[in-house]
Image (cartoon, rainbow, N blue to C red; front, top):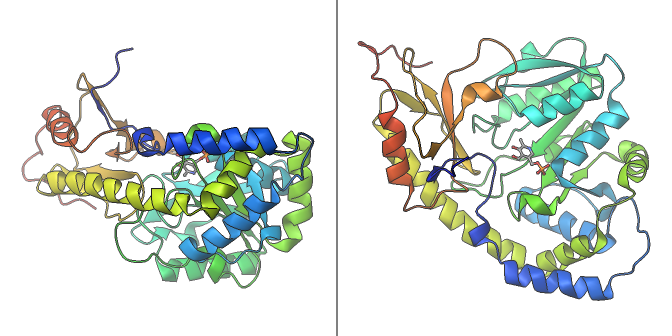
Amino acid sequence: MLEARYDFQVGVPDPRLFPMETWRRLVARELRVSAAGYGEPSGYAPLREAISRHIGISRSVHAGPGDVLITNGAQQALDLVGRVLIEPGACVAVEEPGYPPARQLFRSLGARVAGVPVDAEGLVVEAIPGSARIVYVTPSHQFPLGTPMSLARRAALLAWAERRNAVVIEDDYDSEFRFGERPLEPLQSLDRAGRVVYVGSFSKTLLPMLRLGFLVAPASLGPALRAAKRLSDWHGELPTQAALARFIDEGLLARHIRKATREYAARHALITDALAGDDRLRLVPSTAGLHLCARLAPGVSVRPVPGVAVERLEAYCGEKPPQPGLVLGYGAITQQAIPGGLRLLRSGMSAAPEPARPLP
Ligand SMILES: Cc1ncc(COP(=O)(O)O)c(C=O)c1O
């Protein structure tokens, strides 16, 4: 297949921004000095310490090193939580639209997955099925819409979880790239009843190929999660974990995030400004992450344009009816390419039917 000239792929950071030489040096050093035997299932201890400090500062997550379990990306964190908590036929509530790999994973573990609508404040808590005891959410930057969950909705979700004795899986996959004010507290730090498992990923702040993520679980789930991790792959790769511990401790992660945030903020602004006046689209407000979502006005269609790769919102809808829209990632496309890519993309859109009905 020909590579797209204008690539609005979702969910990938820009590898050109990553300090690869520094990373290579850190990994090479750890390959020489790391112990060669087995490690602890919860992961390399200095990395757990570094992560607990980092997320305390950057995300206000309350976690000691003993609460952190290092995983092979967020996906393995979801897998471990699922293995520990999902019984065959159990109902797991997920956002609709939402993140397909999470939905597919829970289904593969025997769950009945129920899509719950998302409105301008986030997951509609009253719509969670009565039988659900696990809810998977992306409150910082709803995937794929981009809306943050309101404080009132966060409080309602936590109250629901406490009432139902349920567990909330909070996937905080890309909120370190922030272009606005300081974000709302994560569910994890608002939770007083030990109902939240917080899941983090380095796939956006570093690179997806490194497969580095982590979870922070309430103490009651710790032993079962560590046992599940040991049965799964014992622990991840120790030299990579050790390299990341140094990367964080030496301030290199914070520096990389600051630099990448400036770049992504500029790309985000270019897309927002270019689409602002187009009545065929309505951008969903968002001030974080690596993608933007635009809903299509009723009756507007988009045909594929050669050279432009863009994803449809419909691809993230597990249930009918699909919601028409576009999800525009800006991790893979440069600032220089954005205006041309959007011009071409819009050349494939039909005109808005007259008079355009207001968007929901
Ligand atoms: C909602 C969501 N969660 C998690 C991830 C990252 O997953 P992983 O850490 O397994 O690469 C992504 C990546 O696109 C995502 O969109």
